[in-house]
Image (cartoon, rainbow, N blue to C red):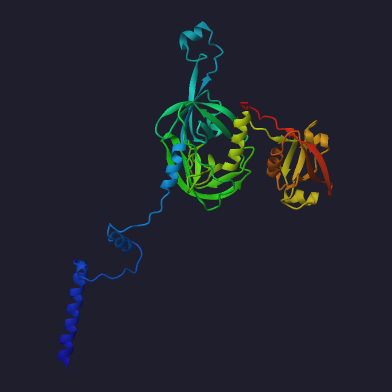
Length: 388
């Protein structure tokens, strides 16, 4: 009996040793079994899948192809005169330094992007892309180049409309429906970052209705993590169907490059501004001539209103529509028409949307008591350094 157990033990030992050798040196001799671990084992199984198998690939190629032909590169230049040296007319000075400090000029160049919005060559872009430019050249998706001129610009929303000089009809981009965008939607940013050429980046909508950023006077930005870099300004932000949802405008960055926080002007605002520019060459907004500030917790308690309700009138311009209507510093503006005022930005937007020359009802809180006044809306003055 002892001998039998000895023979059994030896046989088991030899079998285990043989299995170890085969598993180490010739694992393909052993029958395959499902992997139970993540990592390289799973990758190996995926690589072993026959190449003929059909796979479902997530792609936004159709969206990109639909929008790419409508996105153009914009190259600008302007002549900048160098300041004349005070001793430039001194013969001794000119003898030693020649014309190096003379009143000669040099050209500065810039680049950006734009979006074709009509078959006859209208292009929507950012105002800061073409501001002060005296020469504008547009390059198409297929490499063709042509000249363009400014139809009109709106510095307060940072939008501008160009007209391409061309004899052939163009393929405009499709505009998405207003308010169709949702947080979490996939978006593609198309433009010419750093002048490297047309580029598509992807991301999602991180937030909507971003304000108080100090970028523009009128702000209602789409925030996205799709990479937006210098040169993308004025380019298209499109949805997964290739429809225009925004105009890429700015980034938050500490390095000059994308850090995953980019901002685009929504298509609803861009379309409204564009239509006014095309019709009249400029944008007309309502104005009443007041200086406002947001309500803090302390101010809200002091004036007897809820936080997040109203905007404090900090100053009234003499002779302005507000002054004529009897609005005073210290009033809290609660409503414009029938629309509630949540903060100073909302108040500015509501008044800007009112037609100049028309009366409007304003709801106020004065010394803790509600009041209503009628204000005849004025025309908002053009901002300083406005091209028009």
